Length: 314
Ligand code: NAD
Image (cartoon, rainbow, N blue to C red; front, side, top):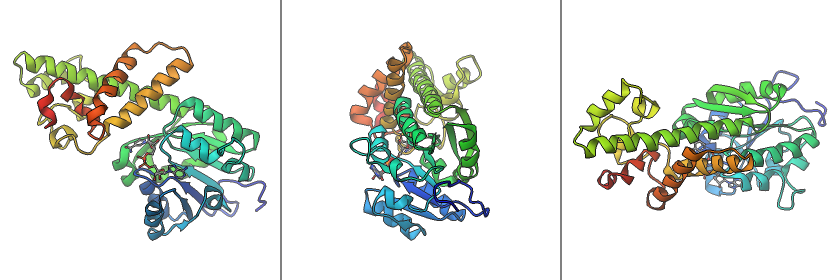
């Protein structure tokens, strides 16, 4: 294979070699699923404990992103925030990052949830170097990462999307092509902004009913069959003991942490500001979660119920 013209799908039909960067709560199980599917993986994380876990699962461990990507046709990253993605790909001074070390034709898939503007900056730098970049944030949480049933929301060219599809299919069940570069991040934060609004609104409605003498389960059943019906009432009721096997019936443990919802709402607000779009409901949800996470950041995001009825948190 010509090193300057790499393809994500090896010309012999072999699986491409993958470098995986960022092996936290999401990245580690995603990388493990790739190993189980027979991909050769080189893994890198700042944390030694994280890389050791992957080594035991069969990955080779690298001491830098550049070393991980040596001989790799595909790079996948799953990092906390935009600054980490910039630091890995663009480097500390914008010119000494991983991108400059990758051969043309390498496929880069960033699955971190970051601002669309941050993703576009990396995408533009990649394009100049002849590297295919996809923003591919996920929905589905750690449960989805472990089960290989994540939803990928992808932004980038048709060609890059087609190359990535068989790899993403190992880690996810639903794979959407949202549009050009940046579109994956925009679509994801639109969805999560709506989810934050729905959860805060549902908690508010249930609280109004309960404070006026209604049983939360009876009220939830009524709204579920009426025009207030929404996903939170269907599968994720925020009031304790209305539903089994949801975080609200388990002390708000597990699920999707409030601090991650707050992060996504802040990304939505940043995007709205960058592009001059009004989002008054999103702004209110962001404000509510900002206050809520001061003490409840690690609890599931349905714990916003406790803003109205503090007793549910204990
Ligand atoms: P995490 O904090 O558990 O893992 C991040 C990992 O990245 C850590 O192991 C950290 O050591 C590593 N890291 C940080 N900077 C690095 C660098 N410069 N080089 C290499 N490694 C570095 O986070 P997570 O829960 O796995 O989330 C990752 C991304 O996925 C975030 O953007 C998050 O918003 C998104 N996400 C998370 C969930 C969830 O439920 N946890 C759901 C959907 C999306």
